[in-house]
Picture 1 (cartoon, helix red, strand yellow):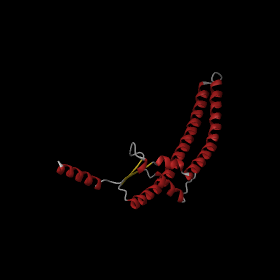
Picture 2 (cartoon, helix red, strand yellow):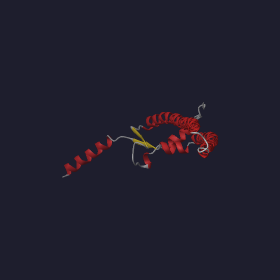
Picture 3 (cartoon, one colour):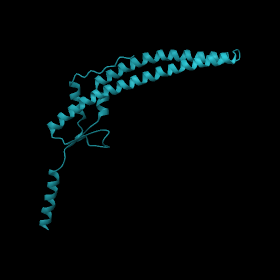
Picture 4 (cartoon, one colour):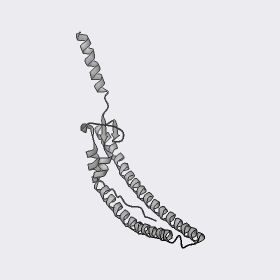
Length: 173
């Protein structure tokens, strides 16, 4: 009986010796609280508002043109009516292209700047892993639930704040 107890303890100790050091971090929490990213998002929102205000005026003009065409439908010949509709459709398509271009520009800028932050996080995670002998580090999209004891988000956040990260909007054409 004593012999079996010693063997069980031996196996438990050997399993603990082979245990991996694991850590996790929450990318979304880090990026949402990072001041440089908040400033970038504010800059992005101001740019977006200014551009969408101009587009809103253009949209209002398109609505009035369409209403005018519809109101004058009975007064116009079929050829003239179709011609005006065709011109309207062209203007509307150009407007839609502008909206799509702006949305793509905004999404691309968010993606580019988040990738800048992610590259810095990768460098920081490598440093933390080396200093603390961590074998595996998961981000929040790679696990379901983890203990706060293995969460290194705070360390990453503090180290990111000490870096001089520049986030900016690319030139809009």
